[in-house]
Length: 188
Figure 1 (cartoon, one colour):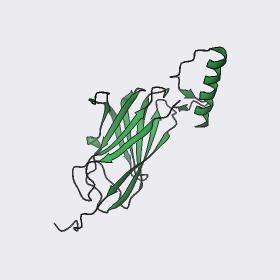
Figure 2: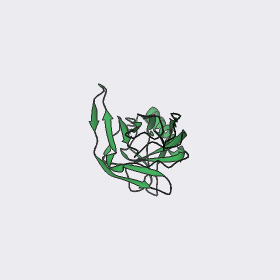
Figure 3: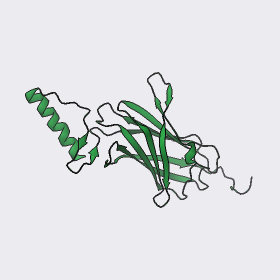
Figure 4: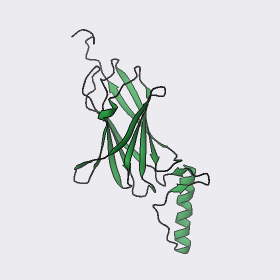
């Protein structure tokens, strides 16, 4: 974060003092090759279609804005379950992503591999091709079934720019609250 701030200050001073034209879309790359966003993406929303426990057919939506001045395209997003009494399992083959345009139309994105790391409870969604700056993207994850236990489930969302050695920018938590309908899940 300090590198991005320093870059922004340096850029502002250079433009103000010498009227130097520097492309704002240039990514920050350290000497060791690590790539950073100039302006990080923002997690705008995290919602679910169903908030009851043990519901089939739910979809969890994570909406991320990649600003015009991000400096680099969005290569991948990780979504890690940080809190919740039950590990949520997903149908990774049913993961989708789309871009929403100003007129509310949705354009489907092509995804690369969508993978799961069981030990860290992390889902990785790769974009192929990467998402270009200036777009709002929504990732749709399909759980096999909503958790059996009610409560708060926190999903940490991290975005990675394009690059062999890219620095992930933590965007915040998607917070899902699941409610029990008062019936036991093993009895109808």
